[in-house]
Length: 375
Image (tube, helix red, strand yellow):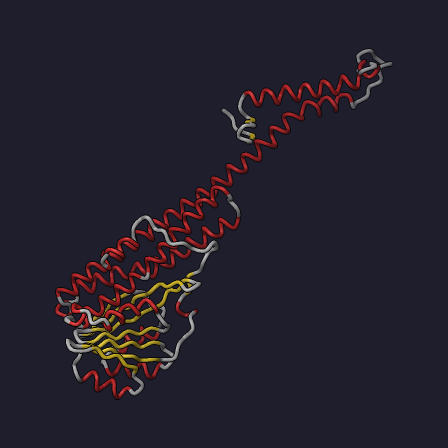
């Protein structure tokens, strides 16, 4: 099965990945641990692939002068001076460098001469779900990525370079950008699967157990979907701008793959919007379940009141104890030999009669063990 087919299978409506029972949070990049600045560069051509860690930036200048296609990974933005020196080597615009150091940017794309600058976000789940900013500079010969934390989803790009796939070796930096964006989009689907599973669980809980915990979980899920939407929605326009304004910086092969990446982003957004609507519907289901449950309780209490109201009335009447010697109309039953059993019998018969009437009308259904259902 091809990679594209596997990705479409993951994004299908039959999402099957499991998720834990409790709500989970989306953590922004600023809540992640900032790593020391580490620089690795991968250069390749038709003959070989070379991957190495760069500690001396003077060596990086020599690699750039050789003109080979290169992918530079800057992981950790703690050493601001080193980041700025890398930006100077690749002649990056200072405004773009400011966006790199400020990890609260929305996804967007910019062009500075022959160099393009792209900001996007990856979504990963390692016990908690994290949205991490990824900044990318690229032109025909190189791709430079900046990330404040470790992003495992990008390991797939490195593996494809190491495998020396023919299509990768024959393309330039624009195709490397597609590989990076493809890894970014792929990172969304596992989380979408978790959202789908979580929605199914919450639907069952909203119907069977409409508790406060269920309501809190629904609200949490809706907030997470909104956070994910804010991270991904601008990416669609960013890729579209790249396709529209890329010009000669993008080869025909890269354009074809970027269009496919754009389509995948649209599908992700469609899933998010669908899940947001389902989340809103779940709240309506929860409120309806609570209302129905309350109605059942009120019906049960009403039936109990109706059954025991006549005995209460009879007991109240005979509790007045008017003196029968003053007038023959003052409760002559008080002098009867069986007056007390007579009153109890009347109470019992009225309760049984009312119970039988309610059951005949369907307000009490013992077969379904429910009370309060009317025909």
